[in-house]
Image 1 (cartoon, helix red, strand yellow):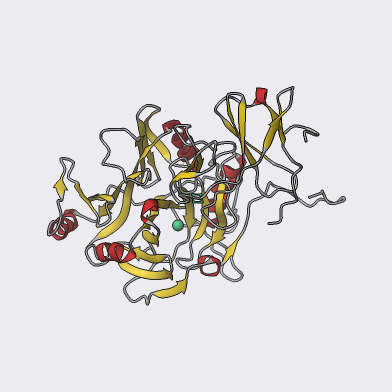
Image 2: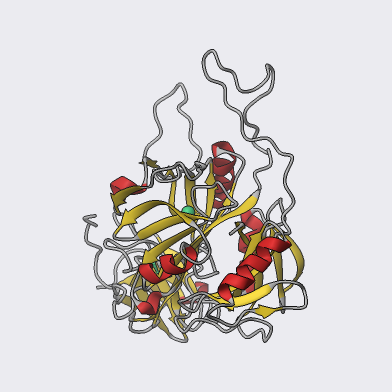
Length: 313
Length: 120
Ligand code: FES
Ligand SMILES: [Fe+2]
């Protein structure tokens, strides 16, 4: 099944202007925004978020738990891939063919899903380059960081869902849609990648009681750890609040920095995630602080040691 | 006991709004929500995870979008402003830790007892 991953995540929120402030500070490009109706918030490749009011009649029904996530739109490589999804899911559920060419259905736990031929545009941007002894990554005279360098989310990376039944989730995403399990945090759940995407994960499931079903976080890929650190620091300097990070995960190796948001979930910057193919042997580790990260740090205001007596605190 | 410098004053707290205040020696802020002439004080510690984590998405932004509840903006749990009980989301049935407050004659809002040194 030639699925690439999330193209668009749709939310129904209580405070549209707050989400606008948050997502523009996070670095997504607003499109068609109005405080009454919401808008689109796009990463550089055109993937992103759609923000609407909770009572917007165009939205699919909400989960009973209060989660503001209303729809995941998954991108597939081409029309044939879309038809393969329709044929597979049409065997046991209603799959609507919408006028815009997309498919609309539900997974086995009531999360609303759409599929479309991806609308993302591949980027001609280089990855962050680092210099190491004997192996310079950057040409001479090219500096690694400037205070005002761009640090914008490049693409929607992954979504993490609180889900009451991991077996049901795996039964759908792996067995029906052909996702591969890359690794598992025992006690939480599996990381999955779709077949047309080498990223370590586009989906991760965490087992929770039913009253928590919903979205735990979403993440966008940055161009590298420096961009991630800069983007996160800019958020902190502007009064936004960190939830977890910066740090680097073990499974997936991605750098992370999570921020709380008015979308009812955390919103993460990530960078430098591992990629895999079907030769990969999935790992397993018990969920906990040790397995979750290689290291974890906490932001502080800029400070410098001078020549004189050290500052207090 | 009403002593020392108030954390804030009623005049500085817009009705129906929330603010967070640092207290020396405490690792988490105190959230104050004003409702008319009443104020409600809570530790800025969401009970979803052991030990608690802070709840605002932006400085002082502790209320949900409809401004009916305190909210943890990590996963969207909602808490009753007056009782601190979680009514929706990840901490259902758990509650926030109350911080007793007292208002003096000038409208100054004080911690009702001297803060204990925070252990965590
Ligand atoms: S940490 Fe507060 S709702 Fe999860
Ligand atoms: Fe993540």
